[in-house]
Image 1 (cartoon, rainbow, N blue to C red):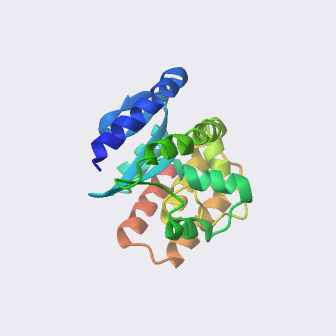
Image 2 (image 1 turned 60 degrees about the horizontal axis):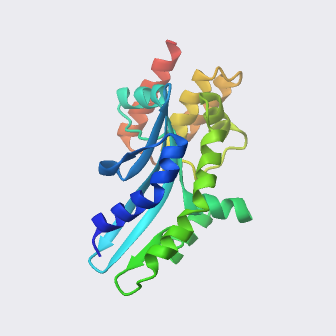
Length: 222
């Protein structure tokens, strides 16, 4: 099974949705993308391919340019202010979140669509699986339509150590701190101290810890 054929099928299926909701199809990035001021909304896909089988992982993301720029300028690579696997988000909406859910879905391969040369109905199953994910993606994007909402996502206490909305605790610390500052969170100083303790305690790379210090110093100037 060729990944290019799968991409072509997915884009063909999603084209009416993309046109109706203001998304552009980015074939090179395997994504639907739209911009609103400094915010970029995306529905995107990653994949693994082995000749006879393709695994498709659907995601939704929101990115605020100011957050991303601060991170990248301070040496920490950031692609999304918040993102999540759409099949995981669907499961969370049905049964709530627990820290083991993402791992359990990975093991069971329920966080992806599995397409095989041996299963001729897989494209129909893919279409049926994608359809209910689209309103879930739009709901996610409507919830996180401001930097303030990113602040609430990552800084509502107690914080979630294994947040499903970022790639790891190191990213959580970065985005949480920056969004708290940009949204003028009244509890910013306590939030800064909390993330400083986490960064000091956790086994993060020296580069990440250095980037965090640079972010703290930068935020003190604005």
